[in-house]
Image (cartoon, one colour):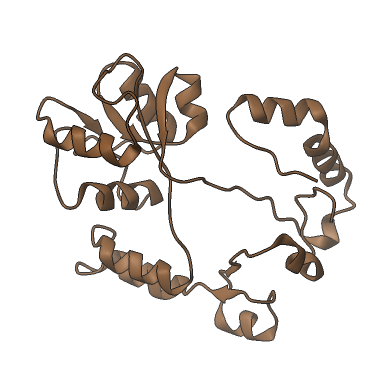
Length: 215
């Protein structure tokens, strides 16, 4: 299969050891699904997310739910490059350093975000200075650190590069485009696929700190 954001069910096995998550209802899943796919119980998760004892603040519950699907949710820590407290450390050591320093101000993420779940797991129930600052995007986290309104936060590498911040990876994050087969020959879809294969597009993606898939 050539580098193509469209994935035919028959080609899934060529992608290697991936975990396929199917968010359709049970009836649709039972009627047919990708080989090795696991159905994500969105209805149950929605109920759990709204419950007091299993809401997103209960990271142990969500770690267990994701682990049951074979998913290991992961991301990264960013800081100002001039901050010597973090330079040369691992992401985990940086977080420990930040939590031990009462003058070190964090910027959090909004409740419900995948990054917020990771943050809460990293800090282990501690509520450091800045915890209540909960913007809704990676860009907002990077801006807060770059502008000196916070000393550290968790976001993705592209925004760290844009703002000239130091970046200590926790884990990679993958993005995929899925298209409906019956619409693949539409002019707009064909143009989109061609653009993704264009070397100039791939160069621009790489310049943002992302790694385009190889053929």
